[in-house]
Length: 113
Length: 114
Image (cartoon, rainbow over all chains, first blue to last red; front, top):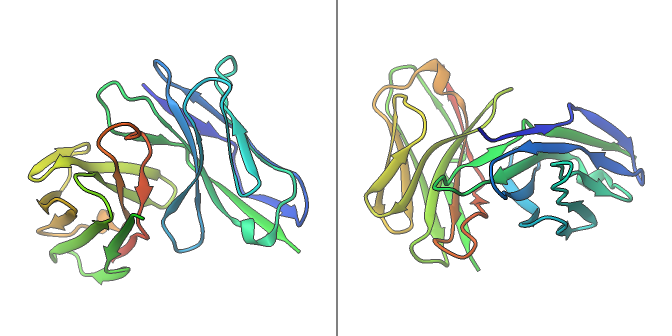
């Protein structure tokens, strides 16, 4: 079956530090890949997506590249801000008759001034 | 633009009581609709999805049910709540075609069963 593995959190960084959150996946076919962000007490917001190999999704300074050879979709940001503190979820959609998004367990990021 | 609403935002209910959570979507027609549950330490779990009025598919057997009485309305219900039903319930929508892989989530309902 499909699965998504994210790096364990929590991750604590100082403001302006470089961020990487690792995500690898197992899926049949050619899934679409997503990063969602959840701020405290809120629902999930779509951060970025990529639908085919070598695509790069980007938004709000975050980016992730769909790497089929390593089955990875790592999230990066060059300079984090306190307002980036949230839980980040990697997810995939494999289609093939299923409407389900498969999520990783989430990585909590705390950015300190 | 499309917006998705959920209510109530928070709910505290005793064990054995009924439940009704509502989700509505604005700005789109004939969306796919989804209910997820986010329980502490267990990630997000798809409970139900619907591709049209009256069409409900269940992903996980449980004491919850879902209904879609109108095109953009999705309701999650229970006749008798269990302690294990506590969690954060999220409604989501996607378009029917050409991008249905992307799901957009509502603000959620935090349910505590005591």
